[in-house]
Length: 159
Image 1 (cartoon, rainbow, N blue to C red):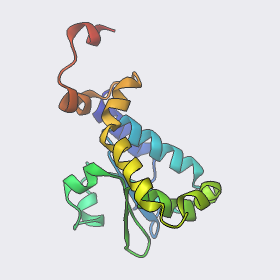
Image 2 (cartoon, helix red, strand yellow; image 1 turned 60 degrees about the vertical axis):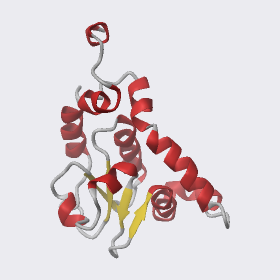
Image 3 (tube, rainbow, N blue to C red; image 1 turned 30 degrees about the horizontal axis):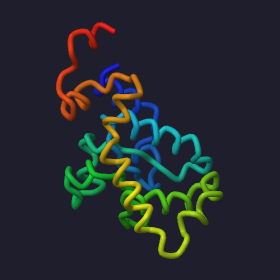
Image 4 (cartoon, one colour; image 1 turned 90 degrees about the horizontal axis):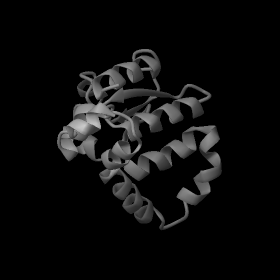
């Protein structure tokens, strides 16, 4: 499955803001296997339907977050909460631990006073390597992996 097909199939599975008005909107990289897998997990953990999702490549993003640049969204996940506040990267995940009941067990760890710089650093390391992790997963990340690592060799395409 290439990245475009993956994005289309993911967007049909994940509820968008129009389907869940008044929810927190998670903006993620729909071309990234790791990001897409992560938001699918978030969706399963969202028992009370508090989240909706948009790929940063979706044209609706400019309506939900007109102030965010493409580069900002490519760097890290964003959550636009129901009050319009922006949370990004580790701060977004930290925020989600308060919103999703099934993430409450990790909430105390992420809220240790003074620990946010550590979580931000760790998040940035993972986010910067997400396409490499996605490529190692064996999934076809299509154009996204080619953009970051060059075209696949003919023998890789045959496998």
